[in-house]
Amino acid sequence: MNRLFLLALFAPVYLAALKIEQTPIEFGEIRVELTKEYIKSHYNLDVKDIKIVPKIIVVHHTAIDDYNSSLSRFTSQTLPSDRPEILNGGAVNVSAHFMVERDGTIHQLMPLDFMARHVIGLNYSSIGIENVGGQNSKDNLTSAQLASNIFLIKELKKQFKTIEYVIGHYEYRCFEADELWLEADRKYRTHKDDPSVRFMSELRANLSGFKGAPCTQGHK
Image: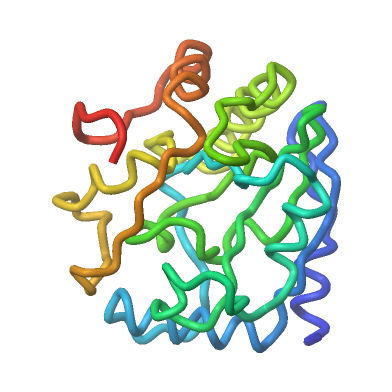
C-alpha cells in the first residue's frame, strides 16, 4: 500500500473525550483508482483525488449482527461477487467511515475526507456510520449504539462545519431533486430500510441543528 495512504489511515483521530478505535480497512491505490472510476461513471466528474467536503451524515446498519463478520464485508478493495444488486454499479467495494459495535465501541475505518461507497447518489458529500446489527431487517440496534451515534455526530459537526444533514439510509432517495444528488444512472437504485425509523427518531430527539431529509416520506 502507498505509504501516504498508510499515514492517512493510521493518523490518530480522537473526537473530544471519546477515543475512536483505529481499525483501517485496506484503502490503497487500487481502491482509490476504482473510486475515481465510480465518481466518473456515476457522477460525471473527472477527479484527481477522492477528497470530499462532508455535508451529510448517513446512518446505516450492517444487516449482520456480528462485528467481525460486518467488518469483513468492507475489507476487500473490490466488490465481492455476492452483491448482485450493486455489482453493475462498479468494482470498488462498499465502505464507510465508521463502524459502531453493539456495545457502543466506535471504529474509524478510513480517512474522513475520502469518499466511501455507502449510499447511492450522495457518496460525494457524505460521511457514513455503520452500526452492527439489523440482520434480517430486525430493528435491534442497541441503546449503547444510540449513545455513541449521538456523541459521534455531535463531534463530527464540530470538526466539519459544512455538515448540514443527518439522515437514515432509508431516506436517501429523498434527495433525488436536491443539488447534492449526483447519480447519473436513473435505474441505479436499491431498497433500504436501515437503520430503522425507530432508531432515527430516537437519534433526532437527541440532536439539534441538523436538517432532515428533504421530504416527509417514511421508507423508500
